[in-house]
Length: 252
Image 1 (cartoon, rainbow, N blue to C red):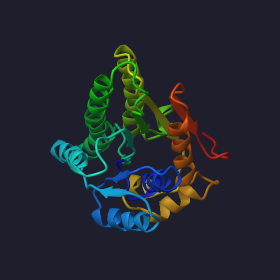
Image 2: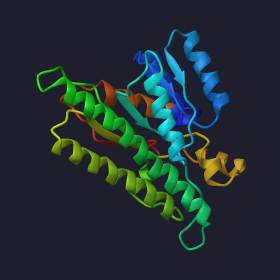
Image 3: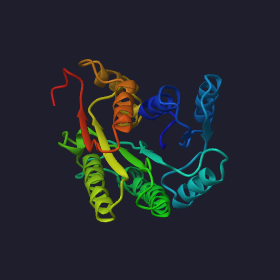
């Protein structure tokens, strides 16, 4: 899974490894955080593999999937959690091009490349198994955002990247149906979640980030992880396509 070093990604990784008993590949840029999480999970008896990756670099993504394929007991990828993503305060009327490019490369292009590499392998294994074989548990889940369903003021470019994730989710579903594949695809779209997101969005303004999360009780990363676990645990006949979730008191 991508973006495993903190926040929602870290919570999902812990849930998959400790609650669902899955073998989990931890990927992100911050190696020291990945190693710390891996040590914690291994101490609890989980099977984890650390594979750093920069989603803005296609070569790094391809190296990630190659490393997973070569890792004993881990490859190939049966479940892909596209969690990595970020927002920058960079309005369309005044934002910096570099901030737009960063959001597009991580939230959209990196997600596309990861999806292509994972699904290509899933489809090959499904074809090799034949039509009478048990269902292969191929599953792709994108972590989107409530911003993919409405546009918060000043967040037009960030929202555009998340609207793209919704489009990509549905597009992939249609492609898989056309291929008569049993691979499932879905997205989870959280509202405010108490993570590092607000500080990154505000270009490091920690005080503003604290104010963002103190207006009402917001979601915690574990809430999103529980939803992802529910999507994965559904029977093969069930595809949970898009879950919208927000704090009970979140106004919009």
